Length: 398
Image 1 (cartoon, rainbow, N blue to C red):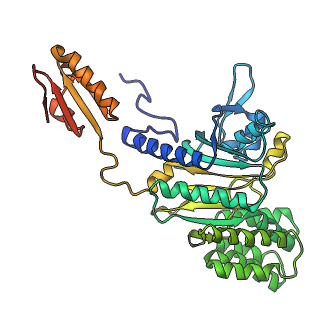
Image 2 (cartoon, helix red, strand yellow):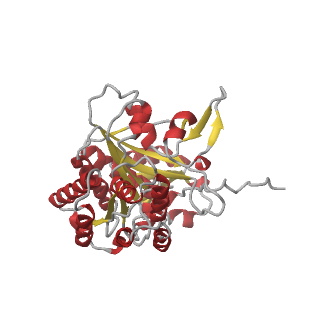
């Protein structure tokens, strides 16, 4: 009688088979090389963090955290994101390091899912954080870096949606003067519920011109960049800070993106609202391939490090490797086994080992396999681009 769950996996978890793992390794090598070229240093954090620190500061909903008690009875969580652990490090181990810091990572993240969710509970992410630079030049750097990584991965038609959550919050509050109403409007934006947004605005009892401004705001999702900028100009005309200040930030970022020749790949979307609450400024999402959802996202989070007693501006991004792999059009030969096999018998073991070692030194991937251990020689040999046999007194090859 078989054991229950012998071949099953917990909800939201999955196995990564050899071909997929090869693709993940390829992406990791590309990302590591490019991030280091941009001057980012890789770090690693533990999978378990204290619930009172990382769990509380992460902005991931409590019901989505994997919670445990450690051996001493302290509540711990599996890390749900990497931005918060890096903020912890910047405020502790790297507190005396000169700013700005440029840190990068590749790590597994864990978020509990409900049965009907259909989302992974564990996924791998590569990302970068630029800590200590409040200028828009830092925002342009992380945007440009993220786009470079996506393009080098082989993703086609890379585009980036860019918004400003600080502008959204200030614009809404200037109109409705109620934080609860602002939060409701933000949620409708996040869920892209434009119909619900219009219906809710109609219940607020606002003057018709103000209600029209809110409705035009949500409809700007379908405007091109020039139309969006023109609408923003009408919104901020005569308004006081911080709305006008955020508008100047947006205009400056657009100017810098043009200098970096990125404006052709940028969609300015002022309705963009992320699900993580710690973002304070520019936010962005990366798209490509045929996927209708983002493969990468990021933004500015100037208030997060203050939770670790080190107030400091910061911005960064993360790339979901599982989503990216789904979006990349994999060439037919990318997953081909570029490996060679050396098949030998007892009499030729020494020669076979020397030959395999020599080929490996040349950079080839070589499987060294005794003939008696092969179940089906024909199907075994089909895995390789070349097979060398050491079965007789003389070597033959095919």
